[in-house]
Amino acid sequence: MVSNATSNTQLLPNGLGDILPSETTKRRGIINAIMDSFMRFGYADVSPPLVEYEETLLAEGPGAALADNTFRLMDPVTRRMLALRSDMTAQIARIASSRLAHHPRPLRLSYTGQVMRINPDPVNPERQLVQIGAELIGASTIAHDAEVAVMALESLYQAGITALSIDLNVPRLLDVILGIDSADDSGSDHAKDSRTESPTIQALRQAVSAKDSKAAGEVDHPQAHVVKTLLDMPLNPASDIKKMIAGCDKNIPAPARQMLNDLADLASLISQLAPDVSLTIDPLERRGFNYHQGIGFSILASGVRGELGRGGRYRTQSPAKSPNSQPVELSTGVTLYLERVLQAAPASAPADRLYLHKDQGLDQVVSLTRDGYQIIIGDADPADDAACQTEAKAMGATHIYSSNGIITI
Image (tube, rainbow, N blue to C red; front, side, top):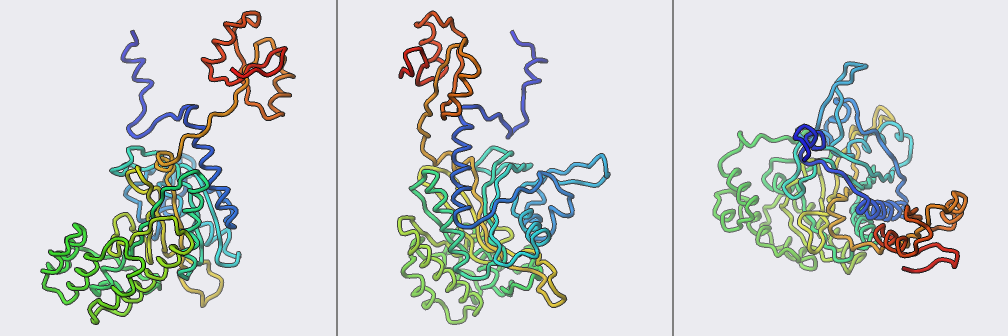
C-alpha cells in the first residue's frame, strides 16, 4: 500500500496534468499541420520567452486584458517582478513594435507555445494551455480580416477538421450605438465604469447579455429599437444583413452603421472564400473580446463545446518611425486553442512500428530509423518466437523484423 506521504509527492496542482505518449503524437501532428499552413500563407514563425517583466507583458492592450488571470513571480537576480504569460498576443505585438519595427507593414507572424492562467475558463479545466496563432500587424482593411479568418479555417482543415463554423461579432458595437464609445482608432482609452452608467443603459446591457430582445425593446432609450432589431436578427443572415442594416432606425450613429456595413462585407468575403463553412452573425456579442476594436470572430466545430479559436481586430503600440507617426497601429489576429482542437480532430492513423529483438545491433537500429521506420526494441528471448510476438503486440508494434525480413503482425 502506498503511503499518503508518497502519494502526495505525485499530486499535481488543479488544472495541470501530464501529457502521455498516446496523446503527444497527435498533438505534435496537429501543431505541425497548423503551423505549416500558416507558413504557406506567408506567416513567419516567432518564439517569445515564457516569462517577461510584468510592466512589459501586461502593458495596455492585449496583455492588460488578462492581467487579473496572470501569474506573477519575482526575479531573484534583478529583484523585479515578472509575469508568466497567459496569452501570447501581447508578446507578438511587442516583437513587432520593437525588434521588427523596421519591417514593412503589414507584417505576418505566427507562433505556438504554452501559456499559464490562474483560473481556467468554464469550458476548459486546464490552466496550462497550448496556443497556436497568427498576427497580421499593421492590418487596416476588411480584406486583412478575411485573410486571417480564412487562413485559420484552412489551417484547421489541414489538421483534419472539416465540420467548422465561424461566428462574427462587433464587440464595441453596443457602446458605439449608445454613444459611449466614439469608434475611433486613435488609441484613446475607452474604459467604462458600469457603476456610473444610467439605469437605462445598464438595462440595455443586461438585455444584450441575456439576448432578450423583448426586454431591450421595453427600455426607454432612443436606441432601444436598434438594439432590439439587432437582437432579433437571425444568426445566419449573411445574405440579408445589408437589408437589415437599411431597416434599422435612421437615428443609428454613422460609426455604428459603418461597423455593420463592414460586418456585412466581411461576412460576404468569408462566405465566398470558405463556402463550405457555416457562417453566423451575432453583432452585439462581446464576451471574451476584451481588447478587440473591430470585428471579432469565433471558430467552432460540431460536437465540441466552446470555441476552437478566436480572433479579430485590435490596437497595438506603433513603432516610433518618425515624430509624426501614429501612437497605435491596427492589427488583426487569431488564436487557436490546442486542447479544443484536439477534441475536434479525427483520430490519427496508427503509425507503423517495427519490433526488433534485443540482440539486434545498434547499427541495425540506426539503419532502420534512417529508412524511416519507428523502432520498438523488445526484451523477450529472441529464440522464443511466441514470446516475441506477444511482447511486440503488447508494445503496440505493427511489424516484426526477423531473419526472414519484415513480417506484419
